[in-house]
Length: 267
Image (cartoon, rainbow, N blue to C red):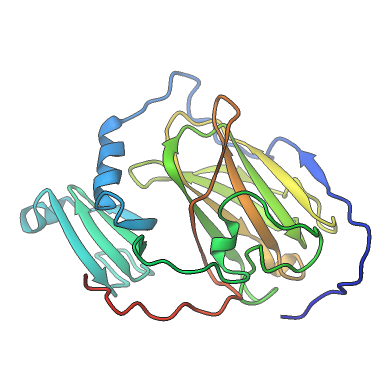
């Protein structure tokens, strides 16, 4: 990775709190919480065996073949029916949905410099405005638009998303959250609240939805904001202003070296 100068210098933290240019207001009524979907999500993880939900889609026609529940193990499928671009992972069927997970929680691995796992937990980049392996970075600085997907330990009704951008900020141009049935909902589209050219920034995205979520996805306009657009942490605020930090993360790409292939994917 090419690095900017690492010479010691004063670094200003740009804290910008602004309403999104575009937000989707679902309802002002009491949250429409579905406890059955929460139970299904937990069961789909095989009670915590799998983590980082990558895909979720309805497949009612598979009920007869799979039954109410099926731990399908690791599959390399990239297509299913009309769906394509699926990511290989661990499949579990909870009628009428398929869930595809990235990893098994029993596999313990150290965080890699610049890996998406660096965007989990609380912010830990000390010297803001510098290239730091404690933040996530994409594989290339400007070749492709990117995304970062965060997963949280428990479902929560989000009221705001807090994005800690530590290097070349200003590239977040869309934020979505997922319903527990897998529906992706836009909460923000537009110009990143942290301006391009800032040393760093904390972008506050307002969220007005009436459902719980465990996943937040950031879309990065990488091709139009030069350099690695590094992200240290993404918090979800609840109605009591508590901040929940991501437990797992996945990304479109990463500058980090790949983990060794798991040798027991079928278990």
